[in-house]
Image (cartoon, rainbow, N blue to C red; front, side, top):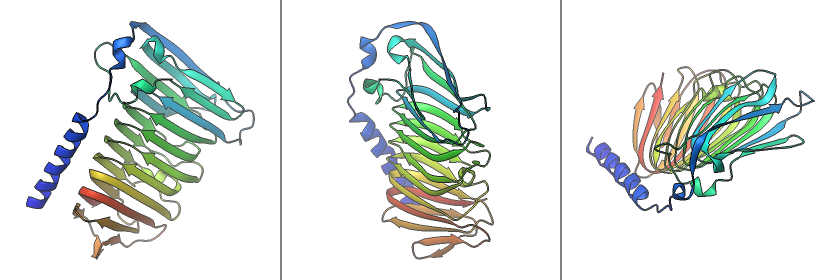
Length: 289
């Protein structure tokens, strides 16, 4: 018990230290807040329905929401902002689509305050795509269930995100990669993502990886995290193996886990989930539900 409290204290102090040592020139001092503008985004569906589109989203800071949509367009939605520099740029080159903001100076801002607004609400069509999302300090909500994602990549700074696969991804996903800084992230329904390989990399923060859903085939997951709190959730009956490499992490288990050295496992039938975890220090919780 004392060790748990000690590790939690280390986590809080480390995150505070990181925050205090980041020096950022405030770009908001050089911009002018104007009236609210709405930019309509409408990227038509590809001519060939089986063509894989490469979709790249580059978002500065603010609020970014994604949801599944219909077959009427590949990407549709709105960008709302009240700073001229926030206006998005849409580029379509054959099967590569990029929606971006040229806001490198804003990438370290965890959130905007006051009267500054920057928000994307986008809907993705049910067409085959490789989705690449890059963002700075932002808040995001992503419902990706039922799409046709061949690959998925997140690369973000300090963020607060929620990613959900409420339905099965309709195609086999090769790789799901998630890279984040000092953040808070909740990923749920991950078995529905239908990936064969998942790589999760994070700095200090609090992370929940919920592998609920319908696992279609054996899947490998690699988790590398710094001084953080990580919760892994698996469904009862799913065969799972977790190999842990950590010298200082506090490990809590809830469920029918079998422990052999640094290996935690649950027997079951069907496709197997193989997870490796590397943590410097912090708290790791394994749950079965």
